[in-house]
Image (cartoon, rainbow, N blue to C red):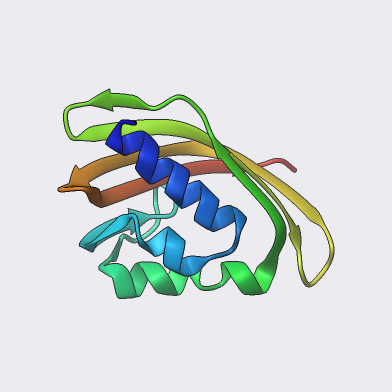
Length: 119
């Protein structure tokens, strides 16, 4: 299995289980994460963990999936879809987007997420 596919499968598995440790296992220690195109970059695993730490408290019944992986050198990308129920309101949310990643060794050194929620 190609490394990009393995990393994205681990990432979506962690998101689907609301398991922050599994999500974080794909990032290098100095990784950069952008949650949206114009958001401030989060640098380092502490900052990225703070972002993903909300998932177990706000999302339930999560299903995160990804599509084909496209690779060019150390960069790879894929589309993703996530559905979940908001714990506070019970509202169902569906979002689709794309992930653009750069490898740093055998982990993700940068992940840029572009997404749109289905209104």
